[in-house]
Image 1 (cartoon, helix red, strand yellow):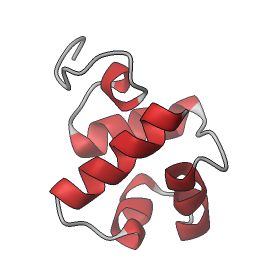
Image 2 (image 1 turned 90 degrees about the horizontal axis):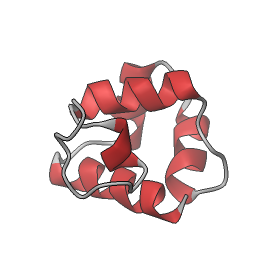
Image 3 (image 1 turned 90 degrees about the vertical axis):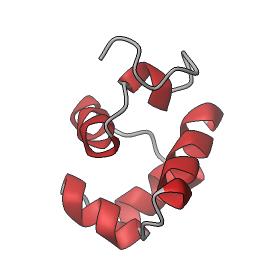
Length: 73
Protein backbone atom coordinates (compact mmCIF):
# COMPACT_ATOMS: atom_id res chain seq x y z
CA UNK A 1 0.00 0.00 0.00
CA UNK A 2 3.05 2.28 0.12
CA UNK A 3 2.50 3.49 -3.46
CA UNK A 4 -1.12 4.25 -2.60
CA UNK A 5 -0.22 6.44 0.38
CA UNK A 6 2.40 8.33 -1.64
CA UNK A 7 0.01 8.88 -4.54
CA UNK A 8 -2.76 10.04 -2.23
CA UNK A 9 -0.51 12.57 -0.50
CA UNK A 10 0.92 13.72 -3.85
CA UNK A 11 -2.52 14.30 -5.35
CA UNK A 12 -3.58 16.22 -2.26
CA UNK A 13 -0.50 18.47 -2.39
CA UNK A 14 -0.68 19.03 -6.17
CA UNK A 15 -4.24 20.28 -5.81
CA UNK A 16 -3.54 22.21 -2.61
CA UNK A 17 -6.33 20.40 -0.74
CA UNK A 18 -6.92 19.76 2.92
CA UNK A 19 -7.50 16.24 4.24
CA UNK A 20 -10.88 17.40 5.60
CA UNK A 21 -11.96 18.65 2.17
CA UNK A 22 -11.15 15.31 0.56
CA UNK A 23 -12.78 13.33 3.37
CA UNK A 24 -15.97 15.39 3.12
CA UNK A 25 -16.13 14.98 -0.65
CA UNK A 26 -15.73 11.20 -0.58
CA UNK A 27 -18.03 10.77 2.43
CA UNK A 28 -15.58 9.36 4.96
CA UNK A 29 -14.52 10.72 8.32
CA UNK A 30 -11.40 12.83 8.56
CA UNK A 31 -9.84 10.13 10.76
CA UNK A 32 -10.53 7.43 8.15
CA UNK A 33 -8.92 9.53 5.42
CA UNK A 34 -5.90 10.17 7.64
CA UNK A 35 -5.54 6.43 8.20
CA UNK A 36 -5.57 5.88 4.42
CA UNK A 37 -2.96 8.56 3.79
CA UNK A 38 -0.69 7.19 6.54
CA UNK A 39 -1.10 3.59 5.39
CA UNK A 40 -2.68 2.54 8.68
CA UNK A 41 -5.83 1.28 6.98
CA UNK A 42 -6.69 0.11 3.48
CA UNK A 43 -9.79 1.64 1.91
CA UNK A 44 -12.74 -0.43 0.77
CA UNK A 45 -13.42 -0.65 -2.96
CA UNK A 46 -16.18 1.97 -2.73
CA UNK A 47 -13.71 4.43 -1.19
CA UNK A 48 -11.08 3.68 -3.85
CA UNK A 49 -13.67 4.39 -6.52
CA UNK A 50 -14.68 7.62 -4.79
CA UNK A 51 -11.04 8.73 -4.53
CA UNK A 52 -10.35 7.92 -8.18
CA UNK A 53 -13.46 9.84 -9.24
CA UNK A 54 -12.65 12.77 -6.97
CA UNK A 55 -9.08 13.12 -8.27
CA UNK A 56 -10.10 12.12 -11.83
CA UNK A 57 -7.50 9.36 -12.04
CA UNK A 58 -7.70 5.62 -12.52
CA UNK A 59 -7.71 3.19 -9.62
CA UNK A 60 -4.64 1.55 -11.16
CA UNK A 61 -2.81 4.87 -10.82
CA UNK A 62 -3.92 5.32 -7.22
CA UNK A 63 -2.63 1.91 -6.16
CA UNK A 64 0.64 2.18 -8.09
CA UNK A 65 -0.05 -0.29 -10.90
CA UNK A 66 0.70 2.36 -13.52
CA UNK A 67 2.31 5.78 -13.68
CA UNK A 68 -0.28 6.99 -16.15
CA UNK A 69 -3.23 8.50 -14.27
CA UNK A 70 -5.50 8.16 -17.33
CA UNK A 71 -4.95 4.50 -18.21
CA UNK A 72 -8.10 2.35 -18.03
CA UNK A 73 -10.22 5.41 -17.49
